[in-house]
Image 1 (tube, helix red, strand yellow):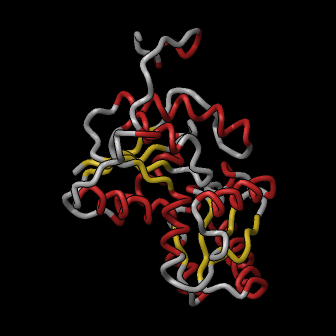
Image 2 (tube, helix red, strand yellow; image 1 turned 135 degrees about the horizontal axis):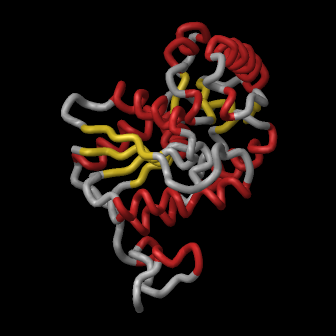
Image 3 (cartoon, rainbow, N blue to C red; image 1 turned 180 degrees about the vertical axis):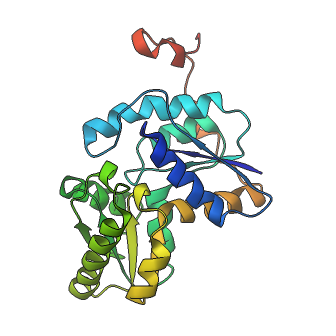
Length: 243
């Protein structure tokens, strides 16, 4: 089995971190490959960033004919529906995977994410995924995405303090880490907090493996059918197909 973990931003060091986390939880017979788009933002911290990240991640998926499944490794799950249309193979977003996993581990969960401006997007996703009643709160550490890996000790200390506060304030039973750049920290946080801490990269990788092992693929009829053939122009010319 082969799983491609797509980092929707263009920072290679973050792709390496994400790939390492996915490899850690994948089965020995699963080949995990990290992919960095050739175009897009260096990090994703706004609706603008999300929109401009989608063409690059779709290009990765369109050109990868060998993967059995894809993990979309950004907590905003940008372009997830479009990716599923383009892939006709399982595509698992880390926000959906993390939240749904956390909902199985307790009555409620709290999300600990990066920037305050992304809190609304996280709440939007809880509603999209039918998990609003399970989410007790969304809390931002206000560490920019690209700074998460600069000083991992500092990042861990800030997240630990924020997670403790979130658990106390929300009365929740689990923590969801709201950024792919937080991969590698859940075990330490779980040990200190005494509650499940869910990393979306790990959760999505395991879920993607499970879908492939069960022989399941997305529906190819209705809304998630392959997009209609048509020409595209300008910078998106290569994305089109003759009608």
